[in-house]
Image 1 (cartoon, rainbow, N blue to C red):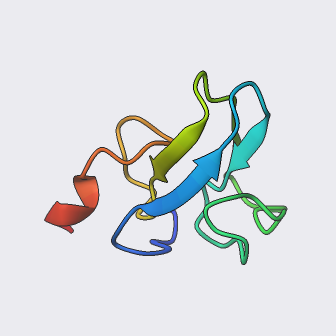
Image 2: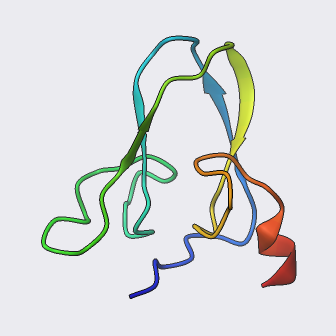
Length: 78
């Protein structure tokens, strides 16, 4: 099963260093790019992460990054 492409661009978000976040891996969340529990009953689970540095980050919206939760530009080839 493939995740739903939430958008073909990264989500630009402000994150705090050391804070826990849960990136949506299924693409179904209404709170993109973060998990809202929409994956329940499926094979996908959210990806927990903690940024090392506070600031603007680019989180993957296409759900195909090789470096999740961060965008690696994969969406440009979709």
